[in-house]
Image 1 (tube, rainbow, N blue to C red):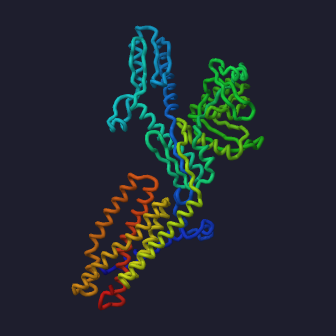
Image 2 (image 1 turned 90 degrees about the vertical axis):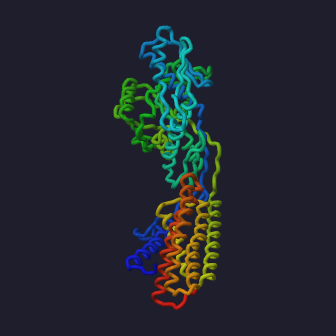
Image 3 (image 1 turned 45 degrees about the vertical axis):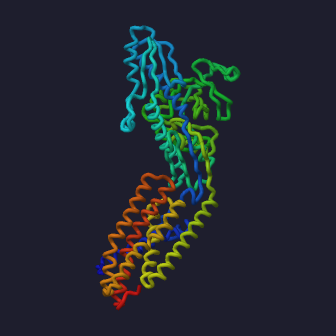
Length: 538
């Protein structure tokens, strides 16, 4: 156990050296790191929300709005299906209270044909819900005389909400990525909630505005044949039109054709830019093939007419179609600032949210509070480190010096690995580091006590040390493997701060085993080889 081949000595020393080198950037500021040579490691540990401040937002998805949109889609599918089969109908309406769509078939002879056709609208639940014991279809299609009802089932609604939440999480993640923040936490909570934690963010108002916007984009023709003032006064726009408030600064509201020419679903890209003539900030957009074809046909047929660009039920621009736009791309102008143009491009590029998100809980952690947490963590770590070093020195003398050298290298390795993995350090993570400091000497205590017992039994120095390391190995591995399994389970099932604790604890276990059983053994072996002691100084 005390014999080390030359390549093993080199390998152990290289691991320790590169661990120290990887941990070194955490001692410098970002400005100091930029002045260092490029070949040196420059990655630092990311600080979590509780250490550097930031925003904690809990959103709830508007399930009612989601159901309303779904019922409108079902209503449209019913209309299209019956028209395609040339089946006459009447009384097509939705009921939000019953989460259903009803339609009455004019000719009793066509009821069975209509029922069979409308049953195709209902889809079976996906495999994920089937495996949880929920089976059936998204819609329950039933008949009462000549009336057919399509009712949303509870498992179908749960599937719809789950899909909407998952889509919302991805959309929110793409929007937050535009801020350039590191390690944001975006995860589902409960049935219809999303937790968003963004460390290091300073402009929380902009974050809330960007994340909370639904981002639903549509293009509508402006109805110039009716009076906007009359529609505002009566509150009843003419049939086939909608009254939409304006944000373009030219009008208080616009009367638009209800049917959208093109929707934002066909957008494939949106980027901020500047108008080549006015040099004002604009947003350029590009459609996919289907969207470009519809957009080109709509602009070709309506040259000279104004059309409105509507974002979340507000007109942001209403230009006049000067000529057909056949290339599938265009630009949105609307007296934007540079930041507003950039945020609008992010919204369009990230896609629309399936439903509106409402803030249920908001907490802002100040940078000063985070700095206080870091300072408290440093003090706790230094006190724990000093106590452990003092105890080991008093208890084991020279061997305690070896253990303390390994302990310092162990901490450097831990910080080095965290830095290279770009892991996020949270307050519970600091607790994991302090716990690692305490646990790091456990293996050395087991080894040194075993060596002491072997020496008392009358064995020689080399035999005592060799036996101490070999017999303590299985005990050390058993203790650390069980703790490592617990840390892995915490990481797997936990979230946020719990994961931060699990990460530091699991990495600390691996580095502790390496330093305690390999590095200290190397130091002891070199001491025995050079000094050739007659007794064990423990």
